[in-house]
Structures are given as structure tokens and as C-alpha cells.
Image (tube, rainbow, N blue to C red):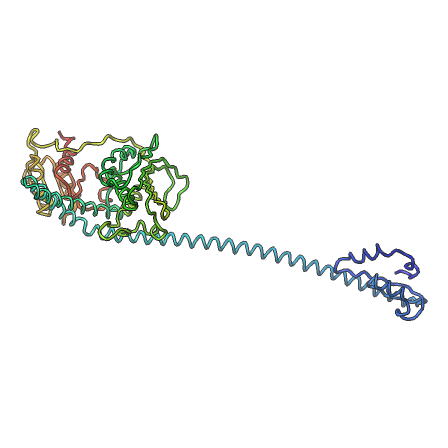
Amino acid sequence: MVADEGLHRADLTPLVRWIDDQPPWSDFPFILLTVRGGGIERNPAAQRVSALLGNVAFLERPFHPTTLVSAVQTALRGRRRQYEARERMEQIRRAESLLERRVRDRTAELESANRQLASQIVERERVETALRQAQRLEAVGQLTSGVAHDFNNLLTVVLGNVEQMKKKVSDPALTRRLEMMAEASRRGATLTAQMLAFSRRQKLELRPVDLNETVMGMRDLLASSIGGSVQIQPPDLADDLWPAMIDPTQIELVILNLAINARDAMDVGGSLTITTRNVEVEEAQDDLPAGQFVMVSVTDTGSGMSEDVLAKAFEPFFTTKAVGQGSGLGLSQVFGLANQAGGGVRITSAVGEGTTIEVYLPRAKGVIEAARPSSERHTARQGEQRRVLVVDDDDAVREVAAGYLDDLGYEVVEAGSGGAALEHFENGCEPTAVLMDFAMPGMNGRELAREIGKRRPGVPVVFVTGYADAEAFSDTDPASILHKPYTRSELAAALDRCLEGVR
């Protein structure tokens, strides 16, 4: 409450500045005591003060005390309203802050949920892809297992008779045709083996292998298989390479398949490089479990693969080659073999820049064994006569085996079933070894071997199989397994291994 005389000569700048700096909720009230002089339009000083102070109530003197008290109470009531407005504004501000915080928290929760959902979608797509791949594996496995036994029986008969005919043919033209038939039989057997390897239904003879030695030992084979159109660079082999746990025969087929694929992807003058490395995977990944691996890779400077081709590279029967130039099972075999051994495969490729295919094989804990040379040194003619009981339900296959054994100097006793084989034992037959088909109607090879063991403990048994699930031979010595189709030298080597302990 101010008398207007106190403002006539005063510097109101600090007061006006304070009034202008009020917070939005504040409109500070002033009561200005003026002299009686008519309306504000006749009092320029009062008009100026009103413009400067803003919220001004004029009270002319003299005034009644009730009028003064009323004016002050009105100003105080207005000020209290402003304080209430301030509190409400603070409440609104706090509510807005709380709302913003809750919105941020909720937004963060939604973003987290979206990330989890996206991750789940990716994981589901990965699982669905793996399921589709497993279904393909199962379909190929069922198809292959359904025909592998009979198909390999047929190839055994063809290959066996070709070998027998080659002994009696001197005409070079006929010899060449017989060799073509033998080669076709071996290619058919390789195709079946690739399908079984892809579907993981072929038993692998896993053992510690020196991949450096394998690569160096394949130089001549690679050079003859690839030809002179592609330059094979000196292999980049790691020092102190760990031994790899793998089937030595299968890894040679893998490297050969990858090299041939690389050759087909390059123009004349391309370059091929084989590399080996030790690799440690600390955390499990989609394509590899955690652990220590030995990596062998084949790199080419060819046309490379597009993303669509990369996505289908391991699918069975998928190929970019012309009709008749590829079965589409080369990379499928590589994929199946690596996974069955406990490793994996990775492909790095760019269109026009070439391709690198890396095969990861588990590190072996054992010692690398010296390779056992295959030969026909063990024959019955080297000493006492030895008798082999041949058990197979297929007459033609049994006849081929008997012919091989006769050439090797063994006495042969034939049986067309498990029951017939047991009858030979009951009639006093004392074979030195038993050569039996694993998959036979009625009594299969494992059941027959069990019954023979009861009658003649310790007799060596060689299982001959055109196909059997890998689990069927889980507890069988790989040295006692002979895969169809087989040659005479392979049969001799199998008998030699089994008879070593009974010489």
C-alpha cells in the first residue's frame, strides 16, 4: 500500500524490473492512496503508475476505515488465489513430470519387448530353417536308406563280375569297356555314400588325422582331377596343427569335392589355395559349437556366389552347374560330414571375387596312428588252409564274395541265411572267419554274430553292409566292417585285419 506522493519523484526502474520478473502465476497487488481529483483520465501520473505497476487498486483520500480494510482484504484474497494457482501449477508440473517418466519407462519397456519379440522372431526363423533342413535330411535319409542296401548289392555284383571278367580278357578294347563299367559302379557307390553322409546315416570311422599330411598326400590326386586349367597354389599349412577327429577317407572326399567345385567356378587361369588353421571358438554360434577345431579351407578366385545361391548351397540336389555336370550333393556331403563329426562349415563369398569354404573339425585328443597299408598279403596259400563262412541272402552277392575268396586261396562255405549258417556250426563246421551280410531278413547280422559267439567264442566276424544306420554299428570295431561294393583287395585287407589276432 503506497501513497502516490512517494512515487512522484522516485526511480521506479528496479520495482518495474522486479514486477516484470515475476513468475507466471504471480500478479503482485498494489493499493495506491491518491488525492481526490476525479477519474484516472484526469490524473496522468496515476495512469502512468497503473501502467508500470500492473495490478493496482486506487483508493482516494479521505476514505473510511472500512473501505481501507475491504481493499486490503480483497488484495490479500487475490494474492492467496495466486498462491493456490502456484500450488496447482506445481502439482500439474509434478504430474506432467511423473507422466513423462512413466511414458519413458513404458516406452523403454515396449522397446525392450519389441527387441525381445524381434529376437524371438529371428530365433523362430532360425529354428524353422533348422527344422526344414532336418526334414530335408530326414527325407533324403529315408530315400537313401530305402534303396542303399539293394543298390549297393547290385553294384557289388556288377563290380565283382567285372573284376572276374578282367582276369580272362586280353582284348584292350574289352578291357577298357570293363574298366568303364567298374568306374561307373564306383561312381554309383560314391553317390550313395554322399547321400548317406549328407543325411548323417553313414557310420564314420573317426580317428585322429593330420590334415597337413592329408593335404600334402593329395597333391597328385588334386592335380590330375583338376587338370591344367587352374593353378593350384602351394598349400598354406599351419605349423603345429592339431590332429583332427575325422574319417580319413571321408575328409579326402571332402577336400576333393571342394577343389572340383572351385575348379568349375573359375575360368582358365584361376587360382586355388588350400589352408589349414587351429581355431578356438569360445562361445557357441549358429554354425559352430564352442570348442577347439581344426580348419581346412579351399579358396578360389572364381565367380563367387550370390545371396540366393548361398542360402541354398547346402540343400540336397541344388546345383548351379549344367545338367549332367553335377549331382548337387558335393556341398551337402561336406555339410553332413562336418556336422556328423561335431564341427561345421562356413562359406564366405562375393560375386565376382571368389569363394572360401571352411570346414571345421573337432580337435582330436588321441595320437595319430600310422596308416595301415592295404594289401592282399594275407592269403590262405601262405600257410595252412583257412575256411571262411560266407553268409548273405543275395545269391549273386554271395557268389561274388566266394569268387574273391577262392582267388585269395580260402576254402569257402556258403549260407543263404542266418539259420543256414547256424546249421553249418551244428554240423561241425569250424570256419576260421565269418563274412556276413548285416541286413538280412529273419536273423540279421548282429543277431547271427551273437548266436555264433555262443557256439564258437572268439571266431572273427567281418560285417558286410550295403547300408545300416550309424547307430547299428555304434559298438562295433570299424576294422570289422566292409562296405559294399568292395573289391578283392578291400576284402583281403578286411580279413587280414580280423585274422591278425588269431594267427
